[in-house]
Image (tube, rainbow, N blue to C red; front, top):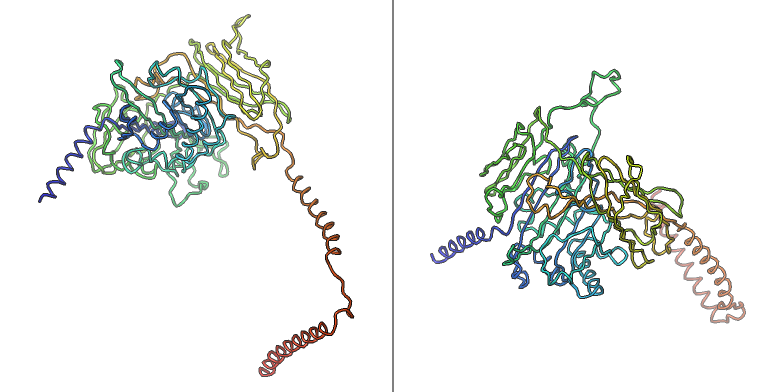
Length: 609
């Protein structure tokens, strides 16, 4: 009886403790259909702990494994990105979170480290990268001095740092554009969550679906937040996963992993075209919304709600969808749920109760209204021009589509040491030029040249882009010749150059649906695609040919000389009677063995006959 009462008491105590501490964790999923049968899924997880508990290593929902790394490395604010693919701004519109939770291709890391000197900051940065490399199963330990820069204007801290420690904060930034993001990075990411992918919206994160997306980005942000009066501070961690899925591709059954062409009889063709025939098909423009549900797209429904999710009233919705108001949505669950809508009806949010499976079903429907996509404020593209193995040039085209707004931005490039730019060839031209004496678009320049095998090139520019115009930024560079031991196994493929980072300085309200006012502090960012730089590559077969030829010649020469020197030639008469007797005995032994074998096999053959 006493054990039952104790168990009931502990259950009640644990329940109310979770309710009291529920404000420490919150999660939300936003689904937004995109043109051409694409779907944007944005996962957001936030948890925090008090600054005092963090210093005393009393962790609740803040992951202990990451917290101890930050303490040991003296890191006050951390931003880590894992990204793959390219965001199609022309068809998908503005980036999620205004690009603040997006990283360049591969791995990107920047952090504010507290240190008394630059040498101490570099040492702690090395400690941080090596520890994170082991935690996330990534190659972050390869972010050495040649891949690290100290940005001056591009990044601003999102957290609240006391003035007493601001002077000792060092910002360091590193990239690995060649890093391949895979399931090995997703598993540690999920282990940092309280429900660890077993319940809540994190149960939808499957490596087969995430890394089959057209574009995906995983972000981890750790920052300190304090009250206005400075009475209390917390350390918040925000984990974000954004992906763009192809609905038709994601609905492919698990037992058919290889995409196969559609049968000709199943093709939907536009027969009104004059060139339509039995052997030619023009795709039919589908006006109806494609049918899909969570189980088809993600491979599974939501496994109930995470039991420690915060209860924040209107901000407690778990799943939000950005669809037209007349779009039909069917809820499939045996548990409880509530629905709320925005004023314009384009955003619907659902709050999930219990541990029952929750699924959203969208049947095929003809919708008159479409979801308005926020257009990007800026377009950027970068490429390598020229030919040959000695020199080349980089061209960046930055486009401002606004007819009235002039955009100020910061352009950051981190180049490897073997790509040496000529800063005197840096030019910025405005097209089209409506003024006879146009204002130079470059306002400020920060340039730190590279040192061979010690550090890369750091370039930051403050640019101004007039309305409805383009700024074409170009500069020449020289290619260095590496030592043969510095080439990777796939040297003929080329070397990856990190994407350029662009930060918009003009203030603008956040464009991401259902975002908080804190989004204004993040800023608006966008990143170009990475570059593939071909370097002068030697013929690696020649060293092997030389080694083989040299070894053969040495073996023949050494063997022909060594053999006469060590071999002893003895005549027959010098062998003696003992040697002859031994030879006779050996000859008799061999003859006896041969006759015994012949008799055995010969006898069997005769018997069989």
